[in-house]
Image (cartoon, rainbow, N blue to C red; front, top):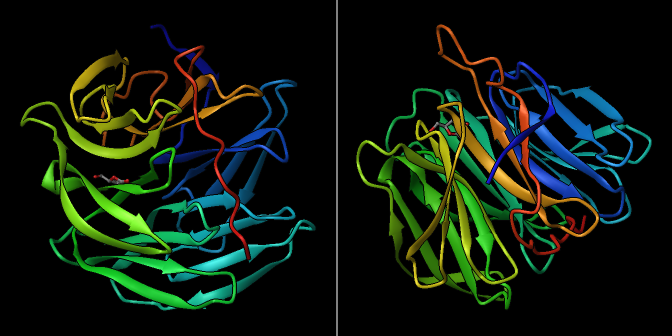
Length: 280
Ligand SMILES: O=C1O[C@@H](CO)[C@H](O)[C@H]1O
């Protein structure tokens, strides 16, 4: 499988690709650059929004606009671009990281410490009325989160564990956490993830110059090698959800590869799942 450069950028910490089906565009972010990018593959049109704080994730909302997982909490951007906080919980030394919209339209938001200290991060569930449920409070780097096609399993990554874990999921609750797969030492750390229509789990490898595809049984089925070490997240996009978009980073690299920090795409990589928008 070969990659193409979808958007040549020099994102410090490119992350969070998400297909916004209603708008027909890909959303992606630069966490430490405090920017939300959009890209329309049909026209090449691009937009950039500077956010109020470091932004860990940006997802489409039902009815338009965005929900943002920001350093100090969760904010809403209306279709006309107006911002307001939904939930503010500033914690010194902690920032937002990856987030994902669950099948019921709730947003699962992760945090981490800037120093990536163990057990300094969290995973929480927030609904459109602003109610927040703390799910995990012993997280190091809360990262990829995704659901199986039938919505009964939730996959989750806390990067320093090197594991991809899986939970039973029902009605906004998780149980029976167990190991799904593990990234061996020297191959990088699991970062973002997405689940495809076959129930396979695609995992971006921070420091691993690749995206891996695991079968529903947790077996490594495919490796898509990429020319940059910091591969941060992946998501299917395009009108038929068959193109795999991959975000990359250049943070901390002395002489980064020319495409480090760009949005890459692997055309025809597979078939993704339609992602729900945040119901709030
Ligand atoms: O998603 C992320 O991965 C880490 C590195 O593990 C990065 O800083 C964070 O945003």
